[in-house]
Length: 209
Length: 209
DNA sequence: TAGATTGTTAATCGATTAACAATC
DNA sequence: TAGATTGTTAATCGATTAACAATC
Image (tube, rainbow over all chains, first blue to last red; front, side, top):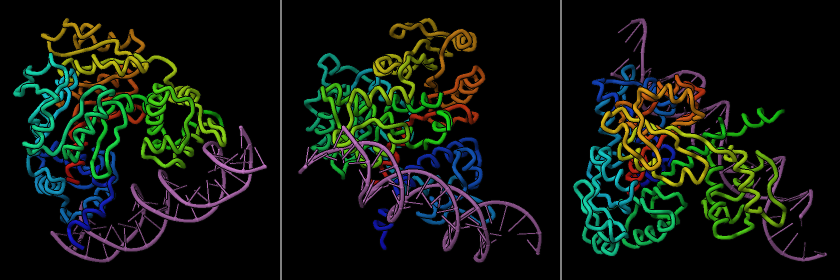
């Protein structure tokens, strides 16, 4: 079994927890803590210690019996596993209020995601500055993507335009999309898509109120 | 078994899918479609038809054999189940780029979530207009919440301030929080919390690239 | 060494799916 | 009636947890 086979075998839900572990570990490192345990991590994340150990065991052995995990070492290991030990160029589509907030969000840059271009269909928006960037016309999307190293895109356009924008991104070879538009986008199976819809979260909470 | 018992029994994961069904149904209704089936809904949402039928069966019978589901009727039923057949007042904490984008987001208002106050700790922000609203000082938070009908809050402050803000909201009686700060907030078990962190989504996708 | 905590196996738990009788 | 699709049961699948030997 080679690395790719092992990779394919890891359940999706396990992969989706790794960023949570990474965030908690980074938080510990910021506070100057050098060592942690599955018990401690589990408590801060409301995840059972057994599950954390099991999740990590898909990728190797990162701890020491009786000692726990070196925070820095585990951060490096998880970063490598998630391919975060490199920088990712990201294209942002949409320069409205939401796009503006995303463009200014420092959290991306600090963690290896660099927004390298912003596009908008609105002529009045084109040419405006957004932090370090200048808004480009949507017509330039394909040409620009072909010349860039961008592998991910963030969709922050109105729901009515989101599917068309997505189709263009997919045709241009984008393989991962973070979607802020409140609709279910259709993409081919090889394209990863992650939805961010605040309404979905709110609506699930009101059930319990 | 009374209604409350039945309510408690429904798995969390089932509840979390109901807003997705609602969104897909609303989309169908907007396009003028009157009837749908678990097969059609499943295809648009990438969920098996059996699962949709099973999920709905926790709450009653909403379809007709051989016919499917009346879109409007199912929308009304799900809205009632999720308590969306009323309006919810929401407090927004944080008037930075993200808070501004949230305050302007029409999607909330259209779906029964009304942001009725915005708070910020920054004196330069206080008094500024944000759409229909005026930014209030953080000092007024408790007094204002006590007088309002607000049941939910949106946290859009920097990570460093998020736990303190959350503690104040919880003490003031808020029972559901939508958190945009990129940290794991601790809340008592009776308080619902939903996290929105774009980085988590991006980081799970890079694994597969 | 004694104590602690990992990595891993086996058991348990819960969620998903297949299948089909009921029925529109 | 024939065809279609629901609601529901039972079977399957997969994820979580308990337990413990290994070992730092």
